[in-house]
Length: 366
Image 1 (cartoon, rainbow, N blue to C red):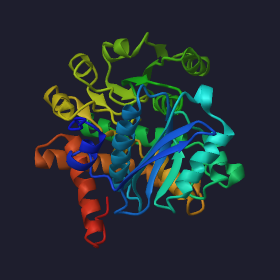
Image 2 (cartoon, rainbow, N blue to C red):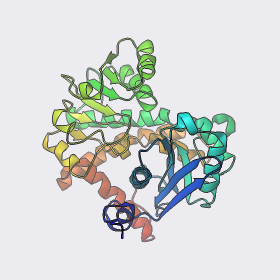
Image 3 (spheres, rainbow, N blue to C red):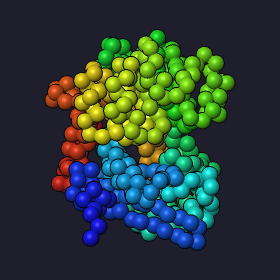
């Protein structure tokens, strides 16, 4: 018998990282689709989360990522004050090679088969145009283009929310919510990071960037020649005088290798699942590095796509995303009061909201 004590089923049913309501494995041989849809919780409402299209090394890695991302969306949506639970989907494969209209339509049919328990949107490897295709097969699709009744690129408000989280971090640590004169390092400037750089420069920050794609770096430096470029993320996090580090690419940026050499006093970025494993939040606290929980500060995008379900209004969404400033400050205050890292404080607040909803009570306002 195969030992599955460290496998997906054990994670799903027995570990603290599990507890998911439903996991769906999807396959359409005609189009080449292989996908995983994970629904972590519907306590607060239908699960909402994006679709990641990525060339995972193994199917097990894809399932594990879907589980982790879906769980993160439950906490993100709870802290954003949305009437949505958490879910996530991953499509296995290189989007540059296998993404086709037929594959996206097949994926849309699988999402539709869940009858509204899961609402999908964009994530790494998927774009507004892709959601327009998916929406042809599934009405539970957000992140569509304005021409197709959608809200467009959610990266805009994601970046705005991260900026608000940075302002709150500055207020908490330095007593002033401005980034003027602060040196901020942004790792990943393809989507959210690109817009974040604009906010930072407008506020008077000194910005250092890096990205594995030269064209993404060039796009920023062509528009903002005053921006400094680091060779890679390892060089960026070691930059002398760095005040804030903003991981805006894939997860796991805060790990046993990066935290000991990080020069920044604050970590606040858009990437999901920045903490590589439990305990990293304590390592940050031990080094007196203030961590703004990722799923709190990067919630601007999900606020935007959730609003699309009710008739999108950008100003309404921007006002709600601006409240990320207050939410982040409230988390720092709770962390200080309870004597725990901010990540643990955010988890407690989110878990309280979900528990109240499951018990039939009105969830506490964030």
